[in-house]
Length: 191
Image 1 (spheres, rainbow, N blue to C red):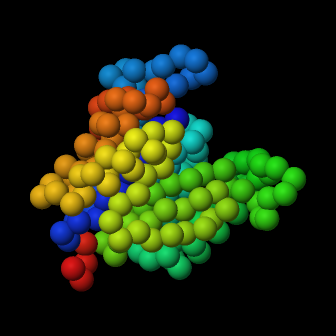
Image 2: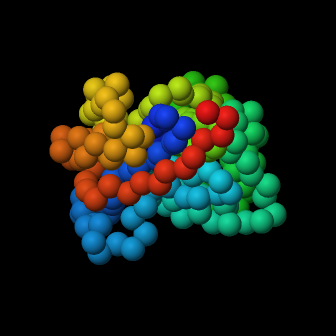
Image 3: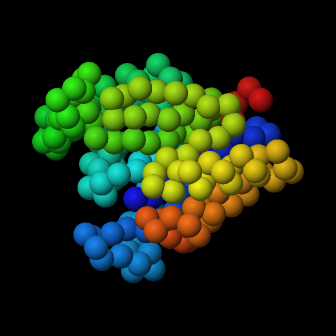
């Protein structure tokens, strides 16, 4: 449940998400929940997650831990940081690393998107990292968001406007996503 998007355009990168939280079958309205964000600032990057809400608490705690050196500036550094996060989640947060009998490696149980001054990235629960040249989306509203991103990207809209429109489109059609949209925009290097 959720919609998380990243957009890179004209020297800027934006990360945006919906604000819906649930507790079982109960919807927790965004106006009543203070910590309804799905991405976190670390250095000059933003890291966003989709999935179980408790992983937001875990990631937020790990990102604040100064004893763990994490960097999200390129694919290699993101991968190495994900390895450190995975080990810490296993050792200190007791995550279940098994998803099924045929998985190739232990699962971190988190999928996410990152914006940094060097670009936009996706990572999955097995710590694979991909870099995108324009945009990407994750979560239950992903298909709606990707369609909106595809339609809006070729227009004169900014990365911020495109990301917000994509999350709004997702919130219109996906019952796992709801307004308001939360977002952050950063300036890219070497553009």
